[in-house]
Image (cartoon, rainbow, N blue to C red; front, side, top):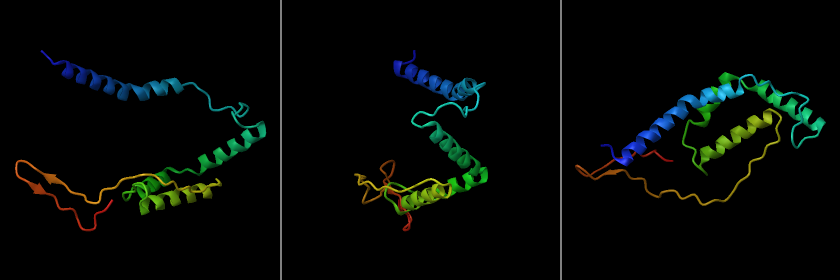
Length: 142
């Protein structure tokens, strides 16, 4: 006889698998047959003239995106660890801001003081079957 925990775990994985498998299909079916946004359809928060300017700006943005650029940008943004407050995090923020500026967006980077605890010592130890400590490369840092 299966334990209640085992049954619950099996049910969880089945439901998760079902949503992961069928979710994209349901989303595609939901969007199937829907028309592109209508130019005459009002945008909430915009006047008629403002909506036309916004749509033109969005169309210009969409036209500037190229598949090969997206791949290169993703490689660049994920090339090194970029946790909160790191030098590479700042470089990524500046890169993204420069891209947005090149597309005509007004962009500024805001800084916030937050509590982000970081370890003083990074250590990986195995306690069994025999104690062992992993050695990290000298140039390794977060």
